[in-house]
Image 1 (cartoon, helix red, strand yellow):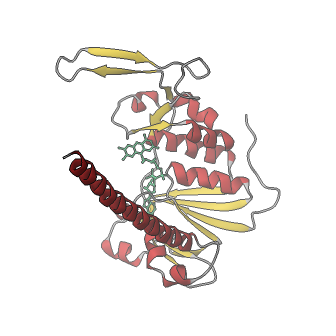
Image 2: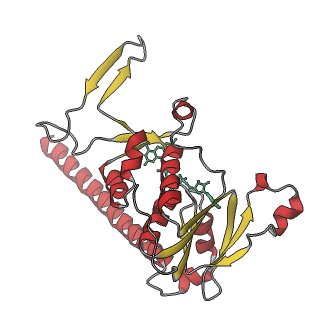
Image 3: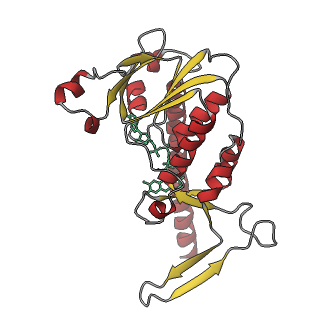
Length: 267
Ligand SMILES: Cc1cc2nc3c(=O)[nH]c(=O)nc-3n(C[C@H](O)[C@H](O)[C@H](O)COP(=O)(O)OP(=O)(O)OC[C@H]3O[C@@H](n4cnc5c(N)ncnc54)[C@H](O)[C@@H]3O)c2cc1C
């Protein structure tokens, strides 16, 4: 039995993590290891148990994620790779089928450490939801300072106060009437303030949208404000693109001139 990560004193700082996917749960583990009290919210229902082999082998449960060396290192660093390893397959080669004849052809990868090996690690593969289930079980067993709530949707982040506050509502399919949903009044959720809000809510992130819409994030010269950093990076990327386009145009003109010279010279 591995020890729990229980701090001697109650955590002083509180964080909300929006999204209990792989990124959100690993972030919650990392924050808890650093002494934060963490509340994680996810709009969807929880995944089934990672141990249920029949269910996971049906092939219909979410898509497969490939864990490369860097991903495995992160999971190891936060103490969860051992659990993930129990359910992840190893990629040792490739089996392809000819599109016309259907004939199979097999190629084996040279194992890491042997001469000619392409990689320094063996890629591991498991379903996205099963990885989420592993992380969730790890959280529930070892991190009492992390509370995970499912079927709770983050509807926005209010940055006008001293501390960021998130609007939390029951997910649409879990409330019985439209008034209940519109009012967002179903306890125990509502507007809740935290010291830190982490947006791990996937590609259509409500947190990122709230940051983008807030005048506070685009004007405040705050080094903790990652949105300002993003804007700066975007500007830099645009400038770099202009320089590249300039080079390409100059190169093209120069190339045309050289070709013309060569052709005329040759003629
Ligand atoms: C078909 C497919 C194949 C992929 N293959 C790979 C691969 O091989 N390797 C790889 O690294 N990546 C792959 N990806 C990308 C993969 O989805 C991500 O790497 C991984 O799931 C990212 O984890 P995440 O926690 O950041 O986001 P997600 O897994 O998207 O989790 C986000 C969570 O946030 C919750 N959420 C969203 N909005 C809200 C809200 N407003 N309030 C509360 N909760 C919210 C969602 O319910 C979800 O559980 C693939 C994606 C797809 C679609």
